Length: 364
Image (cartoon, rainbow, N blue to C red; front, side):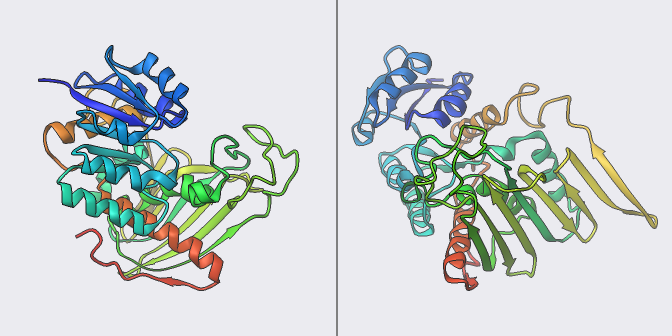
């Protein structure tokens, strides 16, 4: 078959560390267009990952005039919706990096554009493709845990504030750790629960450590004056069926209980904990049990290869959904609910009031 022609918009770290290395391992696609407002970044990405005849652009609208099948959007959150919609309307399938959009309204516009154009849209939640996540999702689908009525979504770093790019810019990103890494934890949790009907949300964002000068940090001290987003944020979500989720996120928090892109599930038949490997717990014949799942060997069911990275599995699955005309693993309607909840947590933090939601049909 003729290779799918792909373009990438935004050639920074997430593109060159995740998307492009994965796509380079997929025979069915070739990257023929590279776009970045800093043209030198696009030039460097093309040298390493581009087809021989690949072109470089500084304006995405010019790039979208090329004959492309797929576009990956790897820009700051503020432009996710604008660029994704333009790519969909240019007759391209689109993978947009997480989070889906800066705001819920922008996310709704993206879903509407995908439906209007008939093109596929997915969001870069690669943690769904981890072996532990795949296994846990499978047993959740089999009802092994029963009715999951309480869950925790974990995204806690002790001191790992990203100090480059626009991560600390609230206008460009929409927030800090909640929208950056909390989004992964929430996506995993909702996916396991298969519950996309939030009723109301309360939350609180903190700016307690962001003013620290000469702070210890994995990527060097941050500039307190540039730190415009929260350093930690927490939310409590009540779903329409009565289930509840506690979401915790931080880039900087005085806690040793650190874990990222993990979930804890409590169901009527059993529970699951990702915090130290994957452990399933429950009761059998009046005895409590804990079962540690060994995940070190073997690949992921239904995917070729062994020990492949989540980024590669995500890219393979995405390309396959286009070739075979099937739904992507991450449906845009699901990612939209994640954005809706994150926005509600920020709003609740600002107002001090719960935010009531009435979007029971989002997944329908």
